[in-house]
Amino acid sequence: YNIMKEQLKEYLQKFAENKKVVREEDIKEFFSSMESNKRQKVSVPSHCR
Image (tube, rainbow, N blue to C red; front, side, top):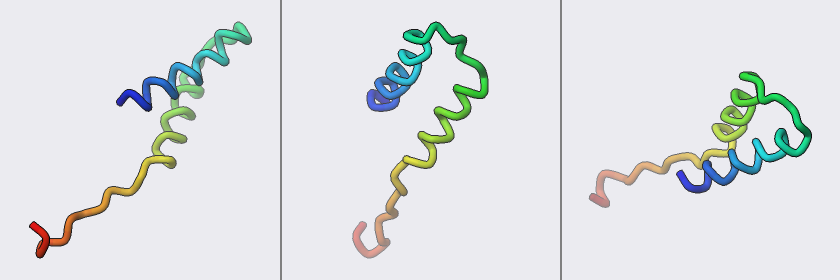
């Protein structure tokens, strides 16, 4: 959660510095890039439980 918060803050900071309005597309772009960067979940083999 904290990593996402920091990345979103940095992303939105660019808009503030350039005095740009954040559009819905910009937010969707941010989250789609987060999704593509997300680590794959590794399942625990049943014999290790």
